[in-house]
Image 1 (cartoon, one colour):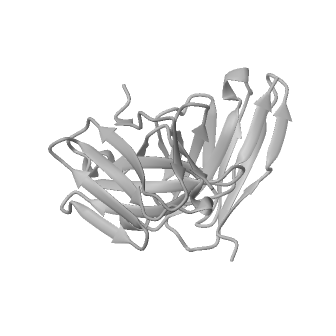
Image 2 (image 1 turned 180 degrees about the horizontal axis):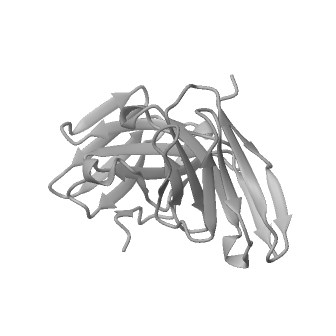
Image 3 (image 1 turned 30 degrees about the vertical axis):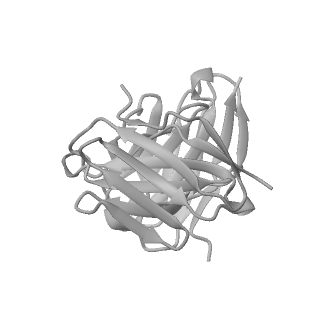
Length: 112
Length: 113
């Protein structure tokens, strides 16, 4: 009964370092998403994958790349971390619009 | 320009009373609206949704009302319980934006004993 699993839960990076946030879902959902949440703001879409083999930019894609490895897994990569990327990152999946999204528990990333 | 606005950052309600959370939107193309609930250190969880062809949807203690002419929706929780203390997000989507969700900034609901 895992749902959406994100790793790691916490991470501190130095400016310029790279890292990959991992996300996996076990609900056989077609669509997967990466969001960031900053204080006083709603969730903002970074990238999404409507189906296996496709990825598209969201509202704030700069500084990020994604890979839809298979139907289960969708990773988010920061190639050269910047302090502006300090945020809480959420991965989500959905079967379609009417079903809502299922979210992971988030990754709290701090870039110093 | 925020397309989905939740103008109350926080709301405090007595246990047992009604909680009303509000959300306004500007994009008339939005045709589907959702409410999510978020506890600290957890991801948001889906609560209730409404299509633009309806003006009301109920699920137990939760009711969402949609006023399309005013571009306004509200979430009613009756009666409010301590476990309802959380941040509530309103989100909206439109067919012409590939159903990507646009989120409000959230309202923190505090239920007082």
